[in-house]
Image (cartoon, rainbow, N blue to C red; front, side, top):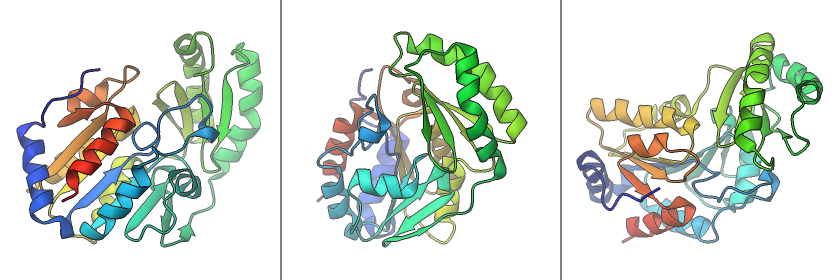
Length: 268
C-alpha cells in the first residue's frame, strides 16, 4: 500500500470547503483500522494514543464528529477514550446504537441474533475450523475472526459459505471484513448511518475515513452528497489486507498513524 501523495481534485475541493467553513463541516471516522490499529484480539484494541486528543481539539471547531463502527457504541467510547469530548457522536453496531454526551440509546437485538449465537459454536466445530478462529459477541451482532489462524484467508473462505447459510436461516446478513465475517441485522450499514446522521444538518462538507469493506457504503454516501453539490472527502486508512477502499478514496494514508497525521493537518 502506497499512500496517495495528494488528494484527488474532488477531495481537494472537499478539504478546501472544510477549511473555509469548518463550523458546518461533518467529519466521520471508522474505528478499527482507522482510529485504532488492528490487533489479534479485538478486546485489546485501543485508539492511537493521539487520536482522542486531536478529535477533542477538532470538535469545537467543526459542526460534528461522528464515529461509525461495527462495535457496540459503549465499547468504542471506552477503547477510543471519547468520553467527555463534546460534539463527538458514536454510532455503534453500524448505526443501531447511538452514544452522545454520555447517553447511550440502543434497540433490543432481533431474535435471529440469539439463534445465531446458539448455533455458531457448533457450526465452527463441525466445519473443522482451526481452534484459533474465535467468536466476538457484539450483542447486536456476532463476528468470527480468523486473524490468529496459521492460514487466516483459507480459514475465512472455509467458513464463508457456512456462515452465509446461517445468516439466511436467521434473517441476518453476512458482512465480510479484514479476516472477519460478521453476522448482523439487515437494514443498516455505515452509509445509511451517515445519511441519517446528516438528515437534520446542512453540512458545508462531509469527510469519511475508513479502512475496510464495510466503509464502502459510507464512501457511497459521500459520493451521493457530492452529486447533490455538497463537497466531500473520502480518506482510506490503507493496508495490505484490503485494497478496495484505496481505489475509491480521494486520499490514502498509512493506517491509523497516517490518519492521526491527517487530523493534525486539519487543525489551524
